[in-house]
Length: 284
Image 1: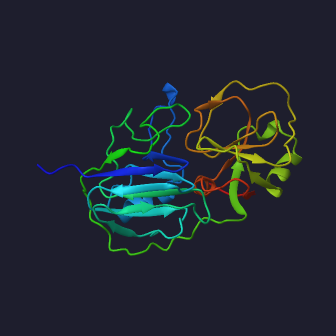
Image 2: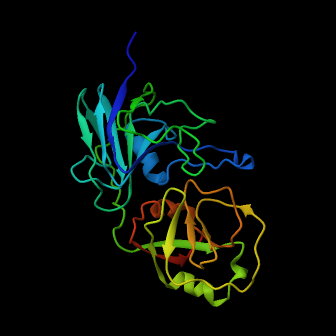
């Protein structure tokens, strides 16, 4: 009987989690979808090694991962580019090879897809770690031995995918009106789409906290809790929007002034502390 293929984490870096496409259809139970923050990079990584697009990968925040191949394995790295590592293309690790990810040049999150996918036990139908609820496989730690699944698809004949790196300076993303835009002074929409915000260091997989000029309400009082989605720009009492990412809560009681267009949310997942972001009116 052939031994199951594995890789071993020697060092996890600041934060490495297992992520897949997330948990669907459980919001009514208070369980969010979670899954990869940058879905575009996640799907590309899987395609490059011939995995199904929803296979589990490693999401590495700001580099630092050191990984040893216990068996020969095909690997692909996408998202934030860590200097000195193969990027946006498949590469083979031989048994005993060590892969080291330094801090990325730009962007925040790097995706490491391993052929066959990371085959830890799913929790409620997904292998994703939800950092808000604590559901899913544990955060990856030093010494973690990760089992790999059996390869199922063909490896595409692609050496390098022509994907640009995440920007390192100003990021411009599109927004559409949210359901509570009327809770703010009319001039606040212009303020939202004209000023430059800065991503706070107090950001995580739940949200990007922004720093900037506050948005002033036209109404007092509080809302009953409403459903929340990835990409919502919710405005707490500080007046500075919070942009929800993959591990967002399923409900919230602060008004949502806008939504980031879904295709642009992936780029927001690559915002690093201190990076500038500006919103512009767009369409879904």
